[in-house]
Length: 255
Image 1 (cartoon, rainbow, N blue to C red):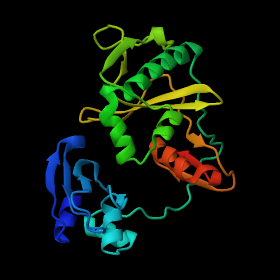
Image 2: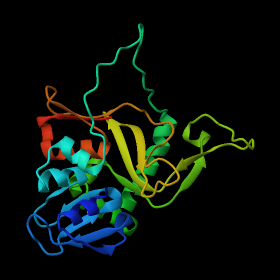
Image 3: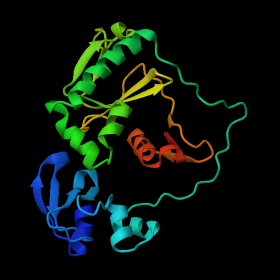
């Protein structure tokens, strides 16, 4: 069941007002009643009130508005709740996968691309992405700058060897090109060293929503705070938000 359908059942009727993020709907907030302050993006499964600050996904809506528990909210939406899993049994002699740091040549090229994309995020090309980061993901301007986020306004293809990567041939025998897709550029640095670039694509019908730039280190993002309190999250943007709100109270880890 879509988030709009759940709201309609509760008498919350919204109208289509924009095509932002695949379609934006607006109306009175079901909590504070603020006229035209409530926004819903069905394709993103998100809602947000500009007046009272209520925000979340379809599960959060049912929990907040109908007072349902997590399991009941999932069942109402026809979703399988995430349950506890039995501890994994590792094969004898198993060792965790070791990550590999990118080459200096890769870092040089990646740093130049990142700096270029950061300029575009603050310009006209990245204005919609910047609004989304602030209004939907809840990141402040200071956090966006601190995280080093950028915006790539178009698809680029580059020479792999120029980035210090192994040359790979396509089926036609021609060298494979390095793809730098349009989207939000999310870097990860450790002790001042650029380890990874990930791109969140605005339209992902032909591939992954989150694209890891080849040559990147695949270690988990760790935003240090209190080493005794850890919070494990799915995405890097989630970890950046938790770090913004909790400061040094917790260490945020994005898998």
